[in-house]
Amino acid sequence: MASMLTAKIFNISSKSNFKKVALDVFRFQAKNNAVYAQFLKHLHVSVEKVQQLEEIPFLPIQFFKSHKVVASKKKIQEVFLSSGTTGNKTSKHYVVEPALYQKSYTKGFESFFGSVKDFAILALLPNYLERKGSSLVYMMQDLIHQSQNTASGFFLNNEAELAKKLQKLDKNGQKTLLIGVSYALLDLIEKQKFDLKNTIVMETGGMKGRRKEMIREELHTVLCNGFGVEKIYSEYGMTELLSQAYSKGDGLFTTPPWMKILIRDTEDALTIQPNGTSGAINVIDLANINSCSFIATDDLGKLYQNNTFEILGRFDHADIRGCNLLLIK
Image 1: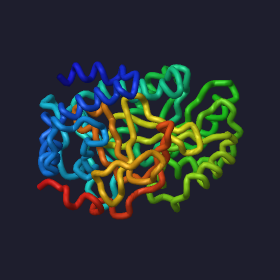
Image 2 (image 1 turned 135 degrees about the horizontal axis):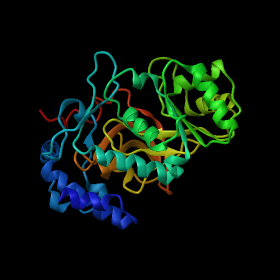
Image 3 (image 1 turned 30 degrees about the vertical axis):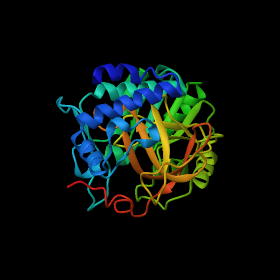
């Protein structure tokens, strides 16, 4: 069943097609994911009666901190860990088929930017490299390999080398992707100013406690000025997912065909809001078939009519609000 569904996931061509595959994945996970099945039972959900995407209950993301969320009996091949902070539990994403993750991020990247082989990829992700189990490092390591460009690579504390390489690549007309965590990109432009013509600068969000948090508009303005570019791109992903959404500027994100965003009411976790309304973000990630494809995140956002969305912030007390009555022992 899982292999049949997997073949359909990356060939979705319409809204009706997405709905059909998503409902099939929901029924599969309701049967094969013990944690999700118990969650549905706790909510008194009749799986057979669920006929619309809006009727699917979304698993609070906190369950990845307290439970082993798996919908497969296959051997675990990778365990991705969230960064977390001292004293807090980290999320664990148990992955039985890394090839699904590889297919998802490769097809997702190429649907937005074209062939990976056209790029030199420079990854400035110091805080991710300093710990084990980062799904972002796993993805970038593979994309760097796929680029087949000898200039591609990771950078930790060698900012001078990165600046020199970035300028040389850009001057030579090489399409380049510089992806970095926000504070590291700010550190770079404080030491060196750029005037880039052939480079995409992409931030992955967050100051990780290294700098004062900035609103997106302010951050992007500073980065645009420092790198000499018109737009700052963004990536939206998380440990618990196998797919990413991307923004080509202005903070508006687009998902690949097998991923969808819904907005839920912040006071009633089971109520889906209409487009144009702000609320909490629910993610459908069909590539996550061997785990859970229906996740209620801690992020706040707004979904627009053209299916683009923006991130507005996070719950201050997300571990409690809206989820305390739904936790499974």
